[in-house]
Amino acid sequence: QVQLVESGGGLVQAGGSLRLSCAASGSIFSANSMGWYRQAPGKQRELVAAITRGGVTNYADSVKGRFTISRDNAKNTVYLQMNSLKPEDTAVYSCNARYYSGIYNGDYWGQGTQVTISS
Image (cartoon, rainbow, N blue to C red):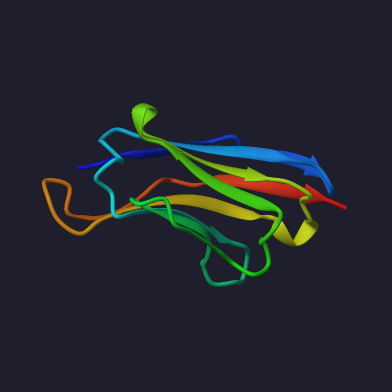
């Protein structure tokens, strides 16, 4: 089992920045992908950004150029740097770890952290 704990959410004004962290209880080195998802009230959960074991990144069109995902395997932590925040970025952000094999085989989620952007 892998436990994921997010932190770094909060309330900021539009144009501001936040950095989210996702600390894993297990090794993220072997995770096939790590990702950040978000869900706004009344909307479906959507992928914000993901990074593969090989370091390939993928972003939602709405955040390209503003958000950056990174991983520190030594610290078993994944980050989401969010700049130029907009009110429409308001959502609960959740961390995901996906393992396709090995002792952690499975899909894991954190409890989420609230991000609120005021206009």
